[in-house]
Image 1 (cartoon, rainbow, N blue to C red):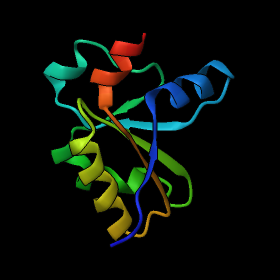
Image 2: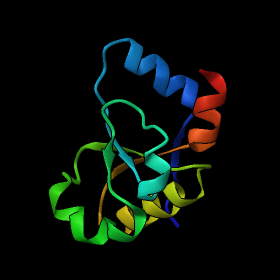
Image 3: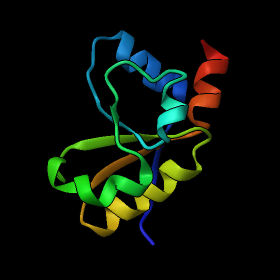
Image 4: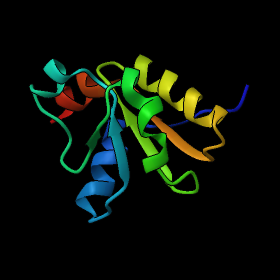
Length: 101
C-alpha cells in the first residue's frame, strides 16, 4: 500500500489565496456539487473517474475532494494504482471546507 498524501482544507485555502492554481478534482455526485464547489475544481464523479483518467497528467499533482474525505481517499488509491505519483486527499472534505469558511 502506497503512502497517501493529505492536505487540510485550511492549507488548500491558503494555497488558493496565495494565487496557486492546483489541479483539483471533486468526486462528489451532481446533486452534491450543485450545493457548491471549490472554485477551479474539476467535477468528475467517483464512478466516472475511470473514463476520464486519460484527461489527467499522471506527473502532475492532483488534489481530490469529496464530502467527507472517504470517496476522495478511494479515488487517490485508484489513481495511485494507475501510476499517478502526486495524488493528495483533502481531509475532512467539503464538510470541513465549509465549516472553516
